[in-house]
Image: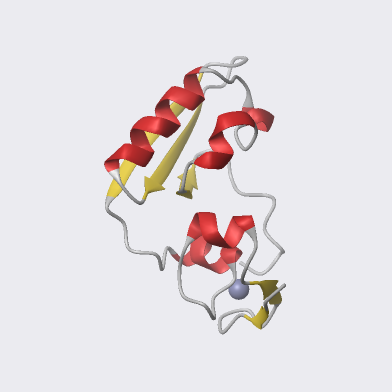
Length: 111
Ligand SMILES: [Zn+2]
């Protein structure tokens, strides 16, 4: 455990966590702020659309490399539904979710 204090929201976070490693950013930025603020520099953006239900949802994801984007695309095709997107093979891919059109309700209430 490497607990750090985020310079943006002053929340403590675990620098060594899978999530922090996945989203990147600086050592003094929590994963939520890296996602919210987009502080990790982008090299590859790619959108994914889900067809579940009546409302299609769009995700725009940022990858560290084209290989990661390709890997995520393959994993995405093997999973369905929102709740599965961080399960299975997707955990092996480094990406940052930068936006989605269904709103972000899981932030800590510090928009
Ligand atoms: Zn933060």
